[in-house]
Length: 164
Image 1 (cartoon, rainbow, N blue to C red):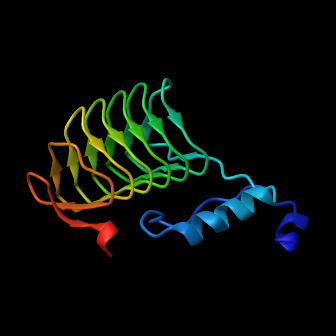
Image 2: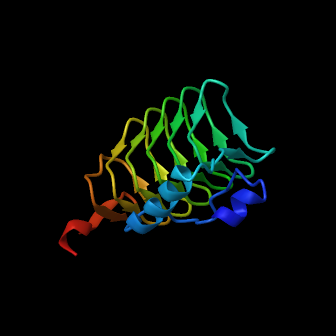
């Protein structure tokens, strides 16, 4: 780290695509870099649409053609991947990636360390609690408890990650 700092590099970008689920070592590494004085800016692709009334946390990335609507809050080290939509008044927790084409309706609350699979869909006013995995193509129509693995349309819990 000293060699990088001595070269005048102060900013880093996170290149780890899936920070959620068993991510303690990765979070520890990111915190070490931050404690050393590195800054992880939030990055927004020029083709992405982010409302001025929304906020994007440190180290998060909004990829090409993604949309973040009004009054939404994106946590730290999230990835809102290409063609994903975060509707109005949503909260996305820290270390939460939305895979390609994920859609979340208005008023959705997503906890920390949640993975939304490709083309997953979350209906409005739903809560997905922390440390959960939503499978590709799943349609979430009811609240999801912590540590759940959910698949299908409508989404159903097939596994509890506490039992591992």
